[in-house]
Image 1 (spheres, helix red, strand yellow):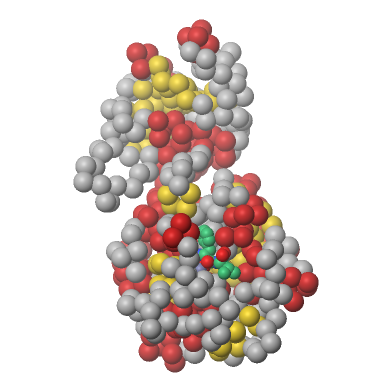
Image 2: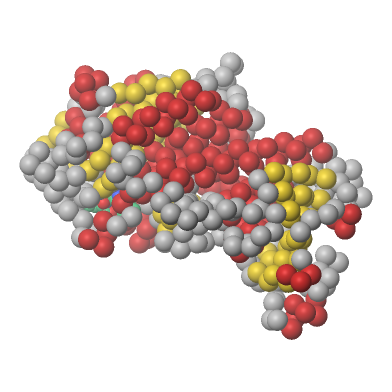
Length: 489
Ligand code: BES
Ligand code: ZN
Ligand code: ZN
């Protein structure tokens, strides 16, 4: 898809179709030329409501407000509605609340690319994308002069962020027997080569040497060897150092504490945190942000077999802490425990984040569309919440730790149990388990993001298609961009 931003008036631009965004159900706006017909067909302009008037070559879509998250999801739904049509050249007027504020423009371009995504790797018949050229008209707004250069920059950044999200979606949607740890490592190497990142891959021998016994235990029953991936973007004079750790369970059968059949389906998406790390690294490199970013992925498959790790086993994690395994389906925290220790050993970072499809409980608590953000301190948690909700369009909410839930991870035989002894608060106890593997230096610089809800949803929602959403990529990219501007916290 090609994007062109122009200052020409919309009616001077040639295209097969015009998309009109109706803000706040206002059918009186000058852009709305078909008020009577729209009323006749019952179009009211409510958020994400779409109406195609093919004979007039106009497509209307409602948006609740002019704010970028609303415009992003509205335009995405409009673009998705065109998936089986033949329109190739589309024009849209961009609303700008202020000529210097390119947020809406960026949201619009992101929405178009994210809305046009479809995963057809396994389809015999591929639907060809008809949409080729998107022309965005920036008619002078409120009489101010536009800064065209920053508009172009906004379009480029939107493309980088949305392409990275789609790259992550592709990885997550890939079937588990086509995307296993070794394949993920290969993807990381390819990504590094293309984007000038450095890349280190740890194989079982190195993992043993590093005492990553919890990770190795989870991996043991699989015919696929585990890998730990470490990607680095290292600019000169970085403003800060950020480490991001992703859970890359290429399949989670639950292990010997086997998942029920219905719950096992979609567990190819248990690599979403790791896939998000790859997407983030791609975007950070392409934007060449002046921040040193380290991406770590624990790529493992959790399977069953004679060699499987067992409930009742006691594991010694990389930092020496002992863990009583009471449920082999709580494997993500075991993998992350070791990778978090490794990440902190390798890099002393200003901010440390982990992203994981860690708990079903988080989905029960906050719903399918929202990530849960946890940590010991307000600062890193607030950074994530701000970047997610205020800028990226991803939804995130905070889940507070407390000492009483912490006690529920106590074990009679080891330093801790890998599951809580209470039925409730599973999202938080998952996060509190991870906090046991954060060292003193990083204690107040760390946030855990449970993306189990939004990472994979089996219906389309806003700018997200059915299947993988690429959760975590846009929120983390916006956070890193903020840090690169010196607006850390
Ligand atoms: N990968 C799952 C969590 C998950 C559930 C992700 C649903 C996405 C959607 C994780 O490894 C898991 O199985 N967690 C258990 C933990 C429990 C045994 C303490 C869970 O949530 O049930
Ligand atoms: Zn599990
Ligand atoms: Zn899992």
